[in-house]
Image (cartoon, rainbow over all chains, first blue to last red):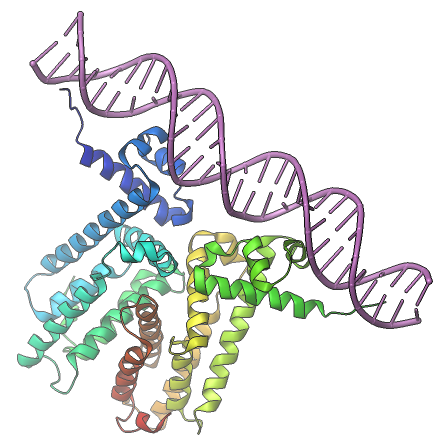
Length: 206
Length: 206
DNA sequence: CCGTTCATGATACGTCTGTATCAGAAACGG
DNA sequence: CCGTTTCTGATACAGACGTATCATGAACGG
């Protein structure tokens, strides 16, 4: 039986093509024909690997989630010694659109986010637990930092974690909207982290 | 000359119908036919008052901006004595989706925001100066509060203002996404304002 | 009452969409 | 070489979209 190609590889190629279109021209421009052209395959093949568009949309969303998670983990590992501050910094800067990859990811994510606001099918068929996970991760790190005496004991870790994540998301929106560039957003985020942790600590991070 | 109706009134009725659809079912559901049905008029009349859909979209966006500005001003005036803290609090809570009106406004705004990310026509034909205005307003208030000794002299008003606005926008996104309700978001915002200003001041605000 | 304005109705056109169906070509394992 | 798998091509269909064009009715100022 001549099974030349891995179906999962083809599906991922097509799914990534959709994400590129969603990032560059918006999710409403990601039609079956456009995705086929972007992936360099025929429309017929897209229908071959994804029987319906909803399946393609959901699969690409799963790929997007995987890439986001992988980026967060990579950024955490890349920021040297594993301290609460570096974990929080790595996590939040992974979400912030400061380079080409995070720009593509956040732009595509915004499209899905807006679609999920009105298409309840997408929201129900997709676990929206991602932001909650990140928020809990940060809250845990803040508690650890508090026990280690690295941040003020009077702060509320839960409220602060929610605030930091919301701050980062809001900064990301302003970057996508063209209100400021990624470096300016990173400066604002760094400023707030500096006020939370010691002022001199963040400067040593790359 | 029998000029029975005010054209501006009719245009506003139709434009508001589009905003209701954009908020409830998304901007992609706001077709000419749907808008006509929502406004209770014929499709022909929508074409009569708006020669093209882009004109309708831009006009409704202008109405949305007016309603947002009016809401901010009303909230500022409603929060009693005009202090920097009450102005900042009123401004930010006007943006936060905590009641029916702000929910509709922020939901419609999100649709336009996402559309503007990819349709450069909309972005160019519309002054995106709104967030900048709000940020400058808050920064000014923070400077005033700093001169009056109401907040710490070591904080950066500009970075703090950008952070507060981004925080509020991020909290709003989490409310729309169903991650938390409006009251929880308001609690997080109040917590951060309490840490910025005196802890006992915000409690007196309604 | 008469003419202008406001408004409706039915209908149509061209385009794009997701989806489906035909046939057929290219590649590779046995 | 043969058969299965992978992939393409052309084409079609029904529906929705923005837009346009007909005719026609209702209301009100002069």
